[in-house]
Length: 234
Image (cartoon, rainbow, N blue to C red; front, side, top):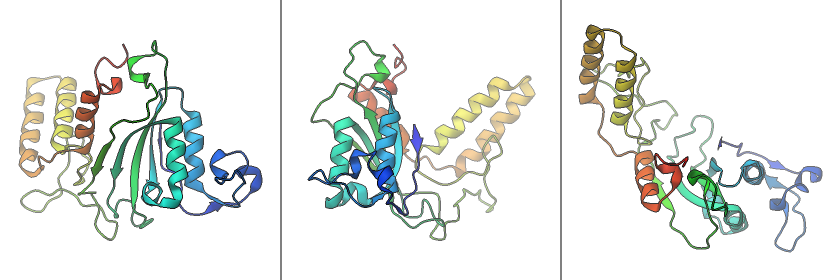
């Protein structure tokens, strides 16, 4: 599950608040207002089946603020925090200046017969993957930062989409995947040669930068996560 809940505004309707455990104070009494994104955390965890995973965009403060400790404890009770990816402050500009992170969570699942990708036995102590995006693909005004060639012309991928300069995944790997897709669909040797030439012409202008997605996958494989291996469905 992928979700980007709204950050602005609080829910104040008691009929709604009383449906959520995260609306309660430490003393068990109901709060009079709760941030929309907080309620999204609980609802999305409820939507997940055991072993299911979600990626949710949250304000950075939810992970840092002392007052939000009860939210982090709630997540810990219901699932395993897999990763926290800190995004640049420009990521959601011009719509918001909120500093955000992506939280990856897997719901606890103690069933030993579950698919490998869905196994997540509950433990109290475990490692977590942390990463900080240094290149978010936008400038301070919220405009996209595109890759250009040596003549200042915008660089397009093999599907004719402009290439945004970011580090969320390795852009060269992305281009290599497109090359494989295009070659598989090509019908003649001339078409294949044209595709290879187009790929080779773009490579000098595509940074060979480590991607966060690849780093997480490699880390997950070392941790033995089934969803990071080719045998995840076994």
